[in-house]
Amino acid sequence: MDSKQNDPFENAREFQALIRVTFSNQSLIVRALTHRSSINELPFLNGDNERLEFLGDAVIGLAAAELLYQRFPEKREGSLTAMRAYLVRKETLADFAREIHLGEYLLMGRGEADTGGRERDSTLSSAFEAVVGAIYLDQGMAKAKDFLLPFFGARLEQLQMDRLTKDPKSRLQEWSQAELKATPSYVTTAASGPDHDREFTVEVRIGDETYGVGTGKSKQQAAQAAAQNALARIAGRPGAE
Image 1 (tube, rainbow, N blue to C red):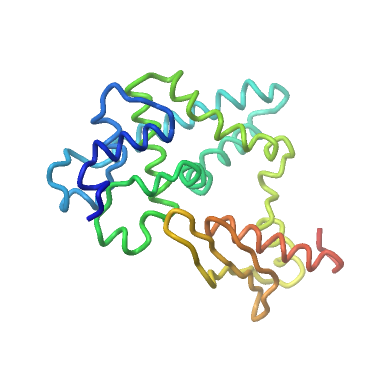
Image 2: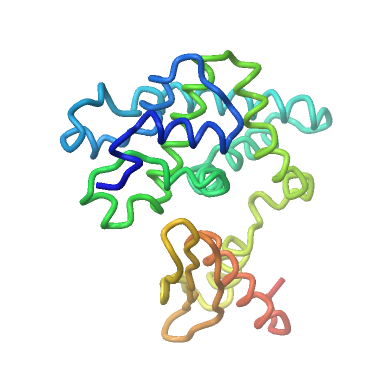
């Protein structure tokens, strides 16, 4: 068991310094960082982060909806709904979590950690929601929005370009199904680097042929890069965008 897990409050203090948020109730942030797999190994903990995850999901959804409503007054409900879905989806939240190295600070059972739990999209997105839920309970909605807006802001250019439903994977799938009557598959072929700075290599295959290769800090990023690489390759073929 590493030193972070031996002293969960010191671990939480380090994380607060990183995200520049200081909690009045330190137990809240400790709980937000507690994965359910750690409870049996760390009996002094009072509970895991699943209830905070539930709350944080609602807070993130409301913050995203308010931001989009104010930022895009010309957009209709359908477009706003699609943009909000993009901002709050599991892969996006997991990327936000990686930006603040959240996986390093999770209190997690040894077995879960050894099988890649600190890098798993579902775990990271849930933990990010829990952190937001904890901020909301400790300091209110305004502080939760202050915490979230820099993450959301980095995605607004993409939102403004209306490419939410036309990301590289979506465009490649449309082309592949229309031209080849086949659906692309994505295969992770390599993973390198330490746990806090992993890099993945993904190949996109259609049938038996590899159409593109991409790398990224998450499997999702690498898959999108592979799809973009494939689109560049097929750009001169009929039907390609």
